[in-house]
Image 1: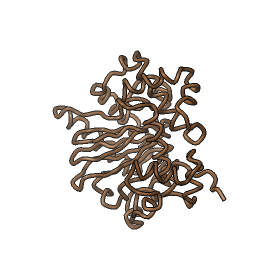
Image 2: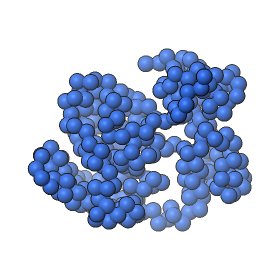
Image 3: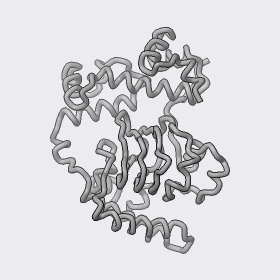
Image 4: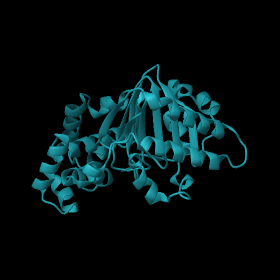
Length: 303
């Protein structure tokens, strides 16, 4: 019998800990979670994280700032390697994985609700003002060495306020968070050229559609119809931006969902094959083995 509603999990702030950590004692030692706002040092919890983190979504926005070491994350279907003095921003409800983090990694992790800032600018204005919060923008931002201490001072202040329990601390956090974003805006890549690039816009729309409709649409032509363009035009746009075919991106999204279903559900291999549009389990097995080097059964058994 097919299991219902199994897909890439969407986690609120209280569910993040169970998903991220293998050590319940470590979870309990951290500051209590909050949907509204949370900040912590990476070095305080990284050793208890379950790498690689499986694909997931969060209901909150988050960012990591790596001050030492390195880490690898994804946003949607794109992978990013983060080095020192680098921010990575992830909008709410965007798919992400977290492949690894070096043993010497240090820095900050923070998540927040946009409601924390809405009285200042409003949701739409915030995302427009700070491009790195946008669903489709480049999530990475490198801080020049000469500006590093200024950025760290703001983060230290935010952390100090969060750990205090005085009345009105979130007002102070809000103003410092806005100050941080204004400072970082200077180092963000401008999106003006990107917005004028039709091929880039169509490719991003295609990626977003894959995330949303992967269980419903199994052909590139169906996504082209959804975007009101010809399959050939979609292929040309995707190829020019990513160097990959539209079909390759479709396969990557199918593979991502397959990994989630194998690791985070009790569905049979046959049910998973059917769910992702591979009617014949043997076709699914060949597809999965070709992409990963493992059969679905072997992958499910990996620790």
